Image 1 (cartoon, rainbow, N blue to C red):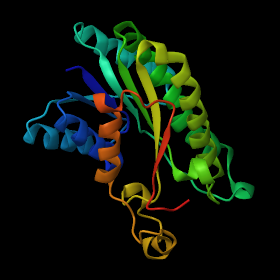
Image 2: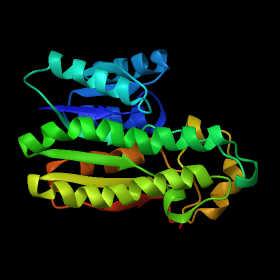
Image 3: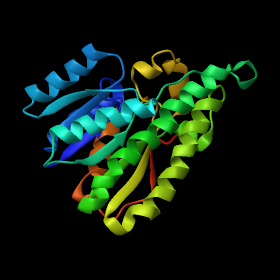
Length: 241
């Protein structure tokens, strides 16, 4: 079984995805940028459940750091390749656009959009050589609907949706699929600052989602059963559109 790489895999949705893919038999590479304690905890959870995991620290927004880390990984694993890539790393820095600072705009796009490009470009070659791969991009309801106060985040996620659809057509002949998963409100560290009691009134199912529910969908898209699904954006949002 070849490896799965999850960017931003130490906490929240990323951690749940790491656990899900490990439960399906994939050795998992947990990428993180700074929170080593959380990444180690995720690794321990996987190993306690009988899975295999390793840590790989790099900032997805730093092109040189991405190349260096993945080149090193390739050298250490000459007989394996990354068969499943989940581009999950992302940050929010919410503000009304009239008050938004340059750094708030660029940091959010650097992580979600440029990070997708730097990591995917690097991992794609071996998927194409081996004629097998799954790329799953974690986007957002914000990238489909647009949410006020999130012009930067909506722009970044909408751009990744467009890239998903284009890349899916480029690589389909080599049996590499590219899909996106668009969560709505999910209970994680990232949404802790939101007023859940107020916002869940807008959700037809009446609650926030769980990271494990998103992870189950990712696990399906990474499986052989999803081999004929590509270029799709699958929403998981409790009916909130």
